[in-house]
Image (cartoon, rainbow, N blue to C red):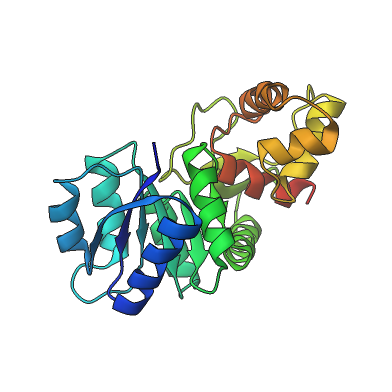
Length: 240
């Protein structure tokens, strides 16, 4: 079955171009389009989609308001921001609201298509400029943290032993690497900071992709961070 995509953007030319790209080059099915969040909510109630590509700045209901509403109504639906904006407030609000990925509109067609497949495979996708902005914000938050003795930072992850980290959580995370991290797990952590997918890590280390997935589960448990984006950002602070 083809991937079912829904597009939300008030730029008609861009929507038409993206529909052609996804349908012809990506071999996906565009099940609907909308020009703002209100129209998207109405139309998504009548169609089934796997992923929504959403702009942030639109007339009427924008993406920042739409994203948390979609996540609440359709928890399994993947949300990929595709926008021209990557300032701090837009990024934090979109990701905290439940966006699974964040790309800029100058991304290539191949990048968007690959991102869609990666999101549906359970990965989180951030444009390089977005990742830099998040890392900068977290470094600033860490530097401004008081009364922690330098051992913790206020970041986008789960505290050790604090359970699963969700999209909107902003909690304290232990800055030290887990002492029981194996050499192979540490090697995988290094590749994660380079943005490699499980498949790419498997190819790099000559492992089966299933083996890498098992290592990832162990890494998530040892860090007590169960979100790929949060883990990557944390690792960039530690070993990136």
